[in-house]
Image 1 (cartoon, helix red, strand yellow):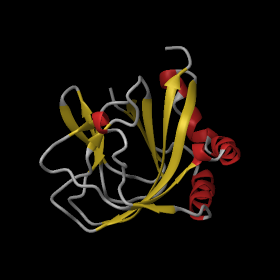
Image 2 (tube, one colour):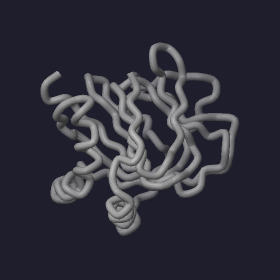
Image 3 (tube, helix red, strand yellow):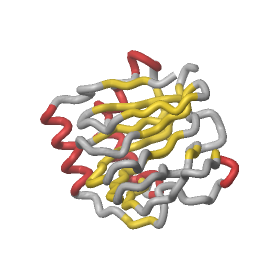
Image 4 (spheres, helix red, strand yellow):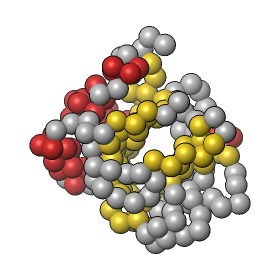
Length: 177
């Protein structure tokens, strides 16, 4: 069950969120998803790790709390569909990558029950691919779009050159499942 919402915030609010992204010092990491949890991966012959820049908010409690406050309009957009949620991890991701025949590894963020949300801060390429009911479904990055789904396998499509793909993604649980 994949949910997709467009125009999640106002244009002014989206600009504030993009400024927050642009003013955060991102760290380079060697792969979009570090292989610290191999049982969370679904392997295929096309997978490829890609370098990206990221900032993991839950490493820094004070920034995690501020981040939740700044992105509250995005998080609240899910409430009519899911009810109240509890954000357990969040980060910014910036991806720039030449085109490839591959995608990133299909992975789950956590092994326990959780949901994943991807808020697209800007228009970009690099679809998010989500395995839903055994089928790979492609979701395009579009400014102010929110994609959320139960924590099933997902990846990034690398078939086109990716330039400045800015996302805020977070994992959450439902407060009253």
